[in-house]
Each structure stands twice: as C-alpha cells, then as structure tokens.
Amino acid sequence: MIRADLHIHTTYSDDSTLTPKVLVEQLAAQPFIKVAALTDHNSVQGCKLTLQLASVYPDILIIPGVEISTAEGDIVILGTEELPPEPWTVGGIVDFARENGSVSVVAHPYREYGMGDIARKYKFDAVEILNGASSASANKSARELARIMDLPGVAGTDAHKPEDLFTVYTEIHAGFDVEEILKAVKKGLVKVSPVTGSIHF
Ligand SMILES: [Zn+2]
Image 1 (tube, rainbow, N blue to C red):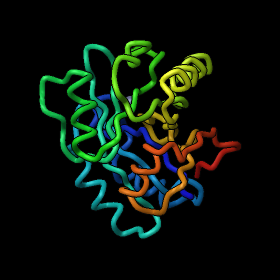
Image 2 (image 1 turned 90 degrees about the vertical axis):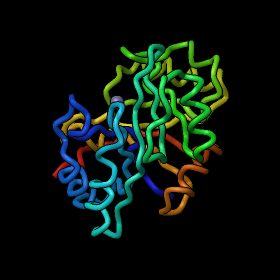
Image 3 (image 1 turned 120 degrees about the horizontal axis):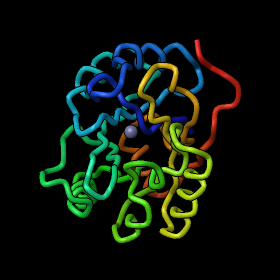
Image 4 (image 1 turned 60 degrees about the vertical axis):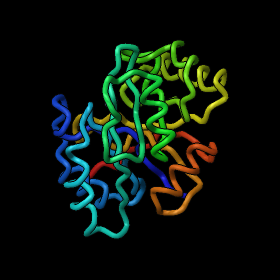
C-alpha cells in the first residue's frame, strides 16, 4: 500500500511557486506521503527535471502527468511525459490516455474550471473526489459524480505552493511502481483521506 498526492503544480505551471527541487525535498523529508504526481498546467516540461531530482532518493516516487485545460473543464492525466495531440477536446484526451496506458481523471469537477455533469458523457478512468483546494461541498458533489459514473475516486492537494502539500492523499493498493499504481487506480483499489494533524517541516 502506498500513499500518493495525485495533483501537484510546480513552477512549470505559470501560477505555482513550488519548485521541483522543493517538492522533491519535501517528499523526501517526511515519512507519510512518498508518491507524488506532477500535473502542471498544459505542460510536461518539468517532468524530466523532477524525475531526475527524485532519482537520488530511493524512497520517493514521482508519477509524471499533466493537467490539461479544455473548453469544457480541466482534466488530469496520470502517467504521461507527453502532451495529448491538439486540439484538446475532452474525448480526444480521454482516448489519448487510454491508448497511452495513462489514467484520465476529472479534475475538481464542481470548482471553477471543473467539468461538472458534462464529465458523464465521457469514459474517464477516475474522478478527483478530494481536491485540497476545493470546498467541502464541491468535494461532496464530486463524490456523488464518481458514484453516478461508477468510477474510482482519487485525491490530490492541487498544490501551488509548498504549504499546500500534504493535506490530502490517495491510499493505493499497489507496490512502489508507477505502472502498478496506474493499474490499481483504474481498478479502483483506492481510498482517499485528509491528513490529520500537520506533517509539515
Ligand atoms: Zn490543478
């Protein structure tokens, strides 16, 4: 079993102050959450550097990914170091993820830039049901959407600065391996949870 934050922005997103270096150091410095997905806005540029920085710490794991802005709302793709082909339509991105062995996630469906009920038209792999930057009621609606769509629910902090890290996590019944983690998420071997107490350093 591993604990993962499945939604994080670094300075490769234009609205984040969290550098890949600080992300990796923070992951290494606390014992609780050791897996993090890199999901910058419309960019995979930070993946290579972050994977490289993480490689010196054997007990942390980075899942490369991206958060794509579409006209209908944001989509997180887990397990890709490539951008989907443009134009970025929801259907096209969902297909790209499936063909690529990645996982498509409806990001914060009931917040600004969320897809809301429109997500039901598409074959996503999971719904983000606990987003660290969303209100309790928006997360509750997201849980309801996951139930209606019969999809696994995942959690991510949506961190844009160091202090946003380690507030929520996804518990995944998988080994310490990106492929295993992606498969387990698709199978629904997941549970979301807030972090109780502070584990900040
Ligand atoms: Zn985000």
